[in-house]
Amino acid sequence: MKPAPFAYAKARSVAHAVDLLAHEEARLLAGGQSLIATLNMRLDRPHLLVDINGVPRLDGIALTNGHVEIGALVRHAQAERSAQVIRHAPLIALAMPHIGHPAIRNRGTIGGSIAFADPAAELPACLVALGGEAEIVGPQGPRTVRADDFFKALFETALAPCDVLTLIRIPAVNAATRTGFAEFARRHGDYAMIGLAACARADGKNLSDIRLAYFGVGPVPLRARNAETALSGGDLDGAVAALDTDLDPSDDVQATAAVKTHLAGVLLRRVAKQLMAAPGSAQAGLERWP
Image: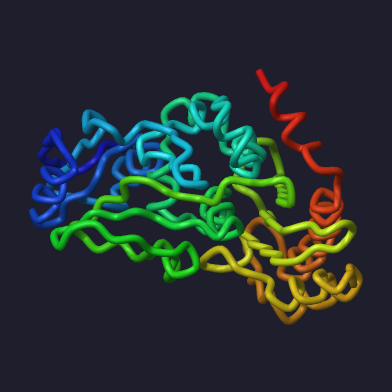
């Protein structure tokens, strides 16, 4: 199919993009990996596409005040190979190879994935697991929204119609940080049936400040808070059992709710091993990534 007719404008700056979005039924165009598909299927019929690919300073990665800042226009492939991301945000680097295929990662953007907020996508769950935040610019100026408050409902976020997501900000890891990631998909590159992104703080063999963010089991990335509490107490079996109350997946074309709940426990056991691994082991492996 072909998209319905639309007008096109190329934004010169973030402020210009915000002004252009004031037009009725305007949409932002960044990597276009989700937008173009919905346009072609006529699931979305905007009157205006606002292209932000030429906006300066949205495609950088920087370590600032103990946080990794990743611009909205950073491509997945760029983040996947970034020494800054590998060293200071290894959870993001762990998730990247699971996102689609190389052609998708070459064009898809970090900001687009976060803003689109597909409940089966990896990056929204990573942002929640890391306790990150989104920097947004709108008609009233810039504001910062915590990841826990950003994802509202199915494909709904804290972004208002005239808002532009400019970057995500996540705490840089330190010697005590542990991260883990795993997912089940029918084929590599497919959306996950279920996945888990996790972050914790290690003190010897004990874990604290655990954040378990599941994706593919609800309308938004879901924190498994009862499982987090059990795992903080060293009770892995109890954490797996707690998923029955933390998660309430629905049957879909991928799997039944019962299968997803079972797989959630399998993923938790796998990710728990990652969280308890020797410091630096995940980062060391990532630094050999081509």
